[in-house]
Amino acid sequence: MPTGTEGYSYHLIQALVPRLLPMSDVRLYFRAPPPDGTFPNTDHRIIPFPRLWTHLRLSWEMVRQPPDLLFVPAHVLPLVRPHRAIVTIHDLGYRYFPEAHPLAQRLYLHLSTRWNARVAEQVIADSKATQRALVREYNVPIEKVTVIYPGYDRSLHPLHAGRRRCDVLNRYNIGEPYILYLGRIQPRKNLVRLVDAFMRVSPNHPDLMLVLAGPTGWLADPIRTRVEALGLRGRVHFPGYIRQEDKAALISGALCFAFPSLYEGFGFPVLEAQACGVPILTSNTSSLPEVAGEGALLVSPVDTEAIAQGLMQLLEDNRLRARLVVQGELNLTRFSWERAARQVTELIEKWVTN
Image (cartoon, rainbow, N blue to C red):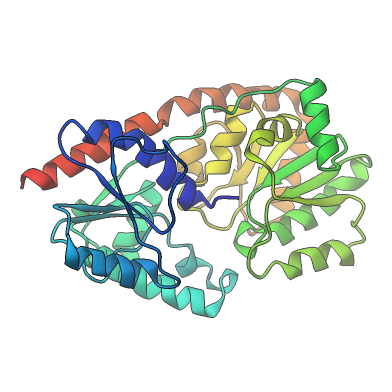
């Protein structure tokens, strides 16, 4: 399952290349060859390297044949880089919830993000929340940070009950009705509190399941341990990785989508659930209110009772559910990869001509 940063990089580059080709040559750097035809009419540089690919191997490529401008959509600039460098910094969650990250990763993210924000000519942030965090945590001048909202997967759409949806649910051994979380299984997603909230809701909805879908990330054992301790093994289901082509059916079949993450730099799953016409519960912190707009019920992610009450509202208030679905559909008009690519192109043009 691609990470949010990997998905961001792929979709943005897909939309960006056609805009850049009329004004300049485009060179893309890869650790391994991409599928044929992925990025046509571009110069592919395949530079395999086992470890520290960006810091060492890409740095050497910058020494050998530097581009006029380097754009890195995934956090980390190489140690050696051209004078004009733009980087996207996606979030600073490790600063606000350090306990949700392994120590080594937290230290690496802190040092590398601070350095990247300092040496880049321009920083792109996915949200105003991330822009504010960069200013607050690393004293980055606000004029150096441009907020450019990503797009979302437009192939996602509501998939009403039918054979396709039934086949997908059977494939992952999911019974209806269910509440859905979709993302990595890791502490920052606040899944222990979600499980505790589900425990409070479940007596009123004895047939309801909680589906925690997605690949296992770091420090995930306490989440499964909590499920066992509460005796919810038969009610909480971990189907693992969900294939891209199955996401619309899985999301559309949920009674509601629960995403009470402790911190998000953007929060792609919120837009995916809105695209599938499902009412959403999410957090009232970080970028999530900014991204969800009026199309989600917002609760405090550190208040288990608030999460439980929010779930009960979504399960039992049909008028609220319908309103959130309509507002979610309207909210999606603010996000597109084409718009993001146009804004990045304008930023690149500004620095190329300087």
